[in-house]
Length: 151
Image (cartoon, rainbow, N blue to C red; front, side, top):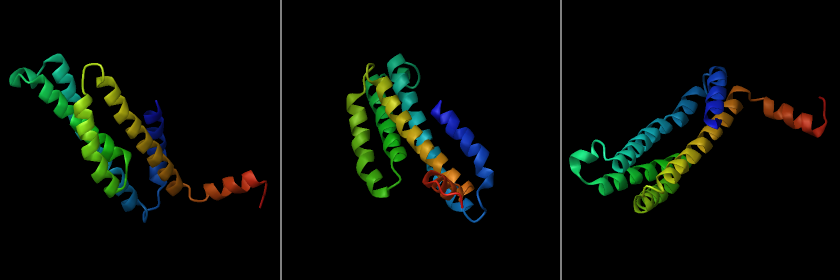
């Protein structure tokens, strides 16, 4: 539900972003597409390993395929959770290895929820950033209102 609300807010307010701020805003939205594709591939491989469907039934190695999918999901979680290149460089291998090690039928859902939490926090951040760009004077008006000043 939070993802849908944030997507609706972004969709409704993005057309109000000034043209000079639009290239930087678009650059901030691009990484999520790649991260979501990595996560989707990881989730697919994890599910295939648990249900013994293609490509696992062709390889005969469900543990390896599932761990590889979990590693991809861990990398996607690290990439989505941070905007800093340094933090991404440090956390992506760690989360990838950690997710691969703990992947089982019982932890499958928790690993997916971890990614969804990172994705939700990124979407909330993007919705706030979009609102700040679309309505630059709203913050000042709210501060004046909270302080009790009318002018």
